[in-house]
Length: 309
Ligand code: NDP
Figure 1 (spheres, helix red, strand yellow):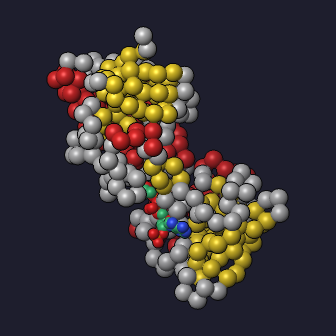
Figure 2 (figure 1 turned 90 degrees about the vertical axis):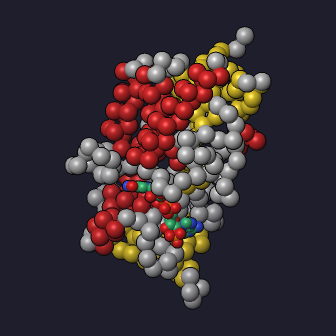
Figure 3 (figure 1 turned 60 degrees about the horizontal axis):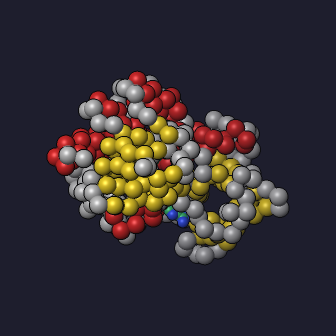
């Protein structure tokens, strides 16, 4: 007989940890499965300034340590380094296939977040770990006083360019348009930072180097003219993509692959909820992930009570 839990939570970021806390307080027996260590995307964020209650800001790691500690204080069981490979329905129960075996459950909350998108250009894969990085917080210190490029014009790119400016020599922000989509407060800080130089209307077409990154080749989006700037590091922030393949036909997704839910975080499969960045939504923040996690948990609790599972 395989292991059974009333609820399986997949992913230990802000949404998953919040769902776990709420389920524990509701007297439901959940198990949280996390592919690596709990904390999720905020672990890669140098400073979080828009989560209410921390007017002076807080490091992403410290905030997520507090989330984990809070869930642990209510006894949430967390199984680390456990990747979910498949979720299927057997009768009214879910069968969750994970590294380490099969687990049955009455309900599932998918809160497994997203993966960084790649630029998809020559040299990118070759130099991962040798100058190409998707995490300034993790790798920034390797580029002390060296010149680096940040690719993208969203919140992630500008926030991480600001953090790199404290460490690196010069920080080039390379954007394919001439206006940013990042929040205004981040834009103003970046425009006022003497170590940050914006390069507009250019898209990266190749990362160059011998054994490590030595430069990035850019193409002008209007004239198609190409040129290279010498840099030792390239930090890629061109968005994030969800991985929902392990859910098969149990969920519907939008054209970008994000899970479609209703306002109660319910997917098309009864008992299966989605929360956080993996869900189709208009604002991906820690604060919205927390709200999603709470709603998913409360609705799963109601489902479990109503179905008698
Ligand atoms: P976004 O999708 O918001 O931005 C991606 C950026 O990369 C865009 O500027 C886009 O250009 C550019 N881009 C996309 N594809 C390419 C490509 N192939 N080559 C070059 N450039 C490309 O992603 P983010 O990671 O910035 O943010 C994701 C979500 O997380 C957002 O909802 C954001 O608000 C949130 N977030 C919030 C933070 C906060 O509140 N402090 C911090 C970090 C993220 P274009 O603009 O032309 O489309």
